[in-house]
Image (tube, rainbow, N blue to C red; front, side, top):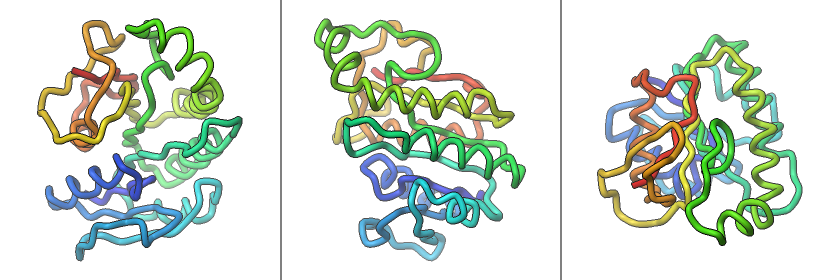
Length: 208
């Protein structure tokens, strides 16, 4: 399968790229700074572009079978970057008849409301610290949910840099899950969604 990975140089994106290559896929990594991409492989191509660059994004979508989007903002202030990226991505995929999109979202973003397990998260982290980030993400997801794409919107809690456990679980509402996940486990879940059908056009809260 030919897969475009957006945000391929990020901490989760690099795990996704590595797993895809290990499974024999052909990967195009869409990155702003190619030097930050550590992986090297004959089946890996690099497409340089910015999240706001519609033309660069559309060029990278040519001849792809599916897309995995791991893009995330690096600041907490007011922005529209995720909204613009998702609008451009949905438009480009629709134009080129690419159906499958696996998108990295966040706990507390799209889909059914999930009650945070801690008071700190409930009263400060989500409504205050991450307010602008989540608002931008939700605006972007409005384009996703209104599209005709076969999307899977993956919503982890706090992402941690730790070895894979193989114990990641998914839920429609997050009930019974611990609100954190190791990036390598999330990457494996996302790669698996390229061919799975259970979570198509749904938001999957993931955790342990």
